[in-house]
Length: 124
Image 1 (tube, rainbow, N blue to C red):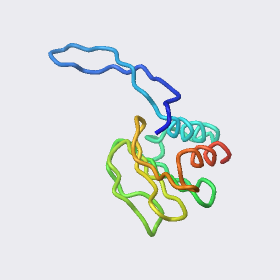
Image 2: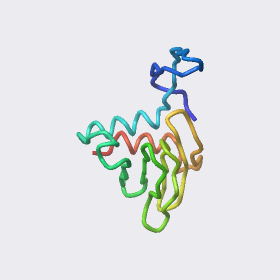
Image 3: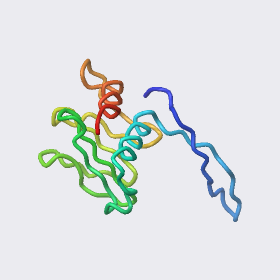
């Protein structure tokens, strides 16, 4: 995965009532998805029933899960996604499973991280 674009402060529970502030990383792919979500003026995923599915450009399709595991994706290729995961399909084929911190994504000539980010940035 490419270098992360955003850093988010997070609070982690250490135990015994102790808390500490940590820095979490959000990948550029997830940032591009969040930017698209915001450009479309959509409510938070939790207010959308806990998931969001979108045909990005006719080639790329994304499905993002909220706090509960559920089956998401194109009708022919639904996938059981764990909470807070995103499935990515290219031309109908599963191309990756991502979290805000990383994951696995296709690395072909047409289906790769750079072409996904480009499609997300162009989508409206």
